[in-house]
Image 1 (cartoon, rainbow, N blue to C red):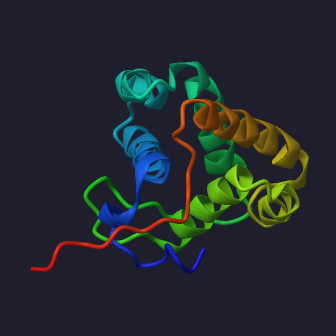
Image 2: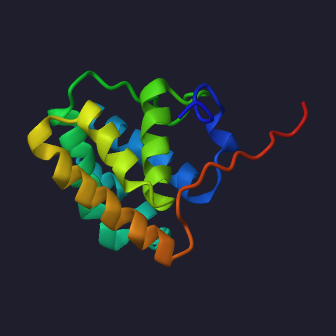
Length: 147
């Protein structure tokens, strides 16, 4: 988590960058009273992730409505990764790295007990799909160009 906290989103690579963008996009769509799944359809399709959009939508809906605390995501232009975004990015990467026990423990801290296994299953399905298209989230941060 700490490797992501307060970093520029521009430092994220591949699947990690997409996941952050998608989480922020989902939240922004809700705030604008638009259907988040419809708002994300085109980018998910373009990235080869259309089949997991329903799982992503359910995951985000559950996080939004069944979280144990208020979770603040940045808007798409926010220049730094927030605390909750860093936690979720680490969670996505833990799943991609096979750290399922650690991911499940983190979910128990974030989501009401009766929804943990649902969120875990959606998360796992999405990450497995991302792995099949060589787009798995990772901890790699790229250097920013010198200004």
